[in-house]
Amino acid sequence: MFENIQKQDKVIYDLIMAEKERQMDGIELIPSENLVSMAVLEALGSFPTNKYAEGYPNKRYYGGNEVIDKIETLAIDRLKQLFSAEHANVQPNSGSPANMAMYSALLSPGDKAMGLKLTEGGHLTHGHKVNFSGKMYNFIQYGVDKETELLDYDAIRKQVLAEKPKLVLSGYTAYPRAIDFKEFRKICDEIGAFCVADIAHIAGLCAAGVHENPVPYFDVVTTTTHKTLRGPRSAAIMCKKEFAERIDKAVFPGLQGGPHEHVIAAKAVAFKEALAPEFKEYASQIVKNARALAESLQSYGYRLVSGGTDNHLILVDVRKSGISGIEAEKALEKAGIYCNKNTIPYETGSPWDPSGIRIGTPVLTTRGMKENEMKQVAEYMHLALANRQNEPKLAQIKIKVKDFCKDFLFYK
Image 1 (cartoon, rainbow, N blue to C red):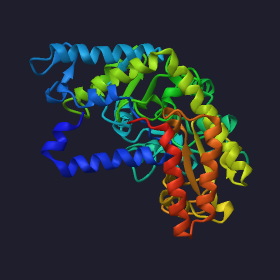
Image 2 (image 1 turned 180 degrees about the vertical axis):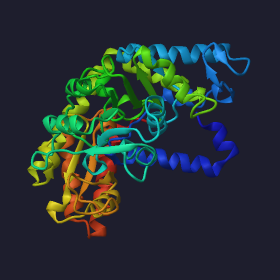
Image 3 (image 1 turned 90 degrees about the vertical axis):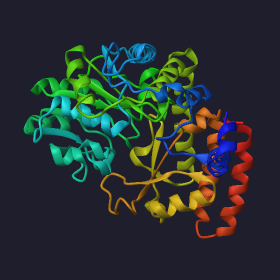
């Protein structure tokens, strides 16, 4: 597949192959990452990359789009089928621009909205003050219960009734539990607020029926197409028909120019894969693996935020074990285990030196690992964290990790 790169640019070829080896030699636990199929990879590097296609199918600003129109329409139709959506836009290039387009379609600058605090599981684009969302709109942040570290729907309802936001956002980036989307719909209906979700992390679980799917009854839902959906790094927006024109105009010409049709072709491939019956088994195994990994970590004495997980991710409060989040991330990386430092609810540290790490099972599940392997992963993690200041020991663990991973090569 990469013969021409090897001939024409050996330096880049070697770096690409080195990254492939890193992915296959290590234990990838970052929950926002996954491994795409070779079919998705091939579509990403295909001929639609050469075509400008500003506009939408059958309404372009350039000629020569008769084939591109078919590609984009196919991606739209497959996404609508996957989530039972009334309307879909597959042009957003990534999750943050998708959220920006959604806000632009529904709000005016200065309008009040509500989203979950970043430190308690939300995303920068859910109203953080350093992000465009917090600068352009009057975001009120809700949180999780301090004792249970779970969403308190009664408290959220009281806050919504008191603040009367124009939009309420649910769906998160670091919340390890199931979300009651129907409850959010009820809360929004009480005040006539736009009911919106960002399901970037759990989209694959929602599509497979492993997690509740908000698309059929929410006003607008944004998502990335990688993570649990196992597609290319990109995004999409789904909505009720009544919001279709507003969403489409917000994406183009409001925010983006020419769409990346090679990526849209890759999305179409991924959506077809997600429509297959075996994808439901895959999504179910993601959750089984996450729960098995969570239980194994608890057996070593680690405290998990909210006490466990209902989805693909786990938040580990490593500070309770006398380790900082950044210290844990670096030690694990030296052992060939990849995660990301992460804040936890009611964080006492900083985003650069938080109390937790965020881990997940999409990649390990894609590689064919199951519950028994999660026990081994937890053991490697514990060994690395216990020997975090012992460089030779971490190097030895990395060798064991590489040998363990040889039985689960996804890219040969």
